Amino acid sequence: MQEMELKAIINLENFKKKLESIGAVFIKKGLQRDFSFDFPDGRIWNKKETLRVRFIGEEAVLSWKGKKEIIDGYKVRDEEEVKIQDGKKMMSVFEKLGMRVRYRRDLNVEYYELNECILRTEVYPQMFDLVELEGTPEKMEETIKLLNMERKDFLKEGINYFMRLFEKETGKKAKICDSNENLL
Image (cartoon, rainbow, N blue to C red):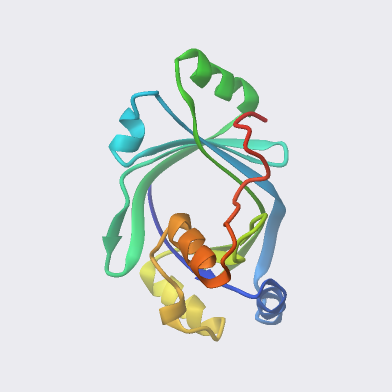
């Protein structure tokens, strides 16, 4: 499957009011914890791919993401996902194979559906509040208009861009996880 997405900085309270006023359908919310794994030699990272275990509450999902491409102003990646019964055991298997956590995120999320798109609000420990918009290019453009937002505010950039921008604008260190520990 191919994922196409954009991200924007939001005022969370105003954004959620807007979603409600235009009839977005709430899907779920919770603490999302992402653990991206790699071998010590960095072979997954060096190919610009990601192998991730994601937890939202008790739900766990294993994901592989291919190299990011920019196509017509959208971030595009091949992606395969499967729900797994026991995410902690999956992490243990990766560790027994010699892998380690390379990257971690802890964020509070809310998922919504609007106009055949998925919107996910992202609240980090110390960083801008963001929205991720996923869908087809046509539906994403329509959804941006429904939200009465500017297309220029929706970027193809990943989280590292927003972290650097936060640090530049605030003088504070961006924090995207609650701990320096790599284990649950």
